[in-house]
Image 1 (cartoon, helix red, strand yellow):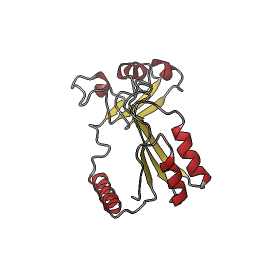
Image 2 (tube, one colour; image 1 turned 90 degrees about the horizontal axis):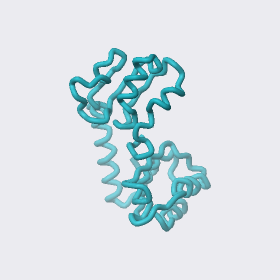
Image 3 (spheres, helix red, strand yellow; image 1 turned 30 degrees about the vertical axis):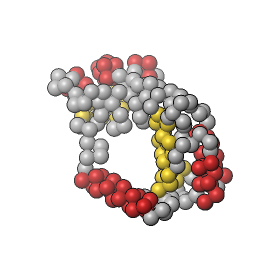
Image 4 (cartoon, one colour; image 1 turned 30 degrees about the horizontal axis):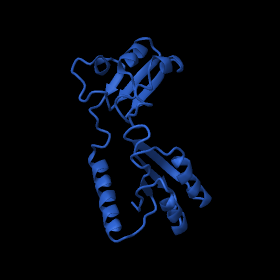
Length: 186
């Protein structure tokens, strides 16, 4: 989950109050999506039984951070992608993608589409691209969307289970709001 105005402090007093008592929270996504002060309150009240956190609003967190010091919190220093295996896997995927792209090859696992012109937003792009893939019976395995600001340029990365046909890729590339389209096999 990226940190956006819509996701900033999305886990807060209101959302904790709606949770089943004894819930466990794990955040390895992005600092700032949890209101850390309110998480301490939820931990103290027993609403949240435990929290495992790899990311924080301010990194590194201060040595006296009440959340890091809480007895029911397991904290790691943003290690999510820091293992040797993860780094090696990412390096191999990137190298293979670059080599393939330089050869002009199309790939089956990711569509990276800066979709929206910088001047204006374009609602409905997720559905448009998803529908094109769905018409081809291509299953989406993951999707990540981010933008620099509301109604500004956006980036969408999509993982797919099967390689879309050349016709489907052409349709996606012809969507008027898509500025750039790259299809990579990782």
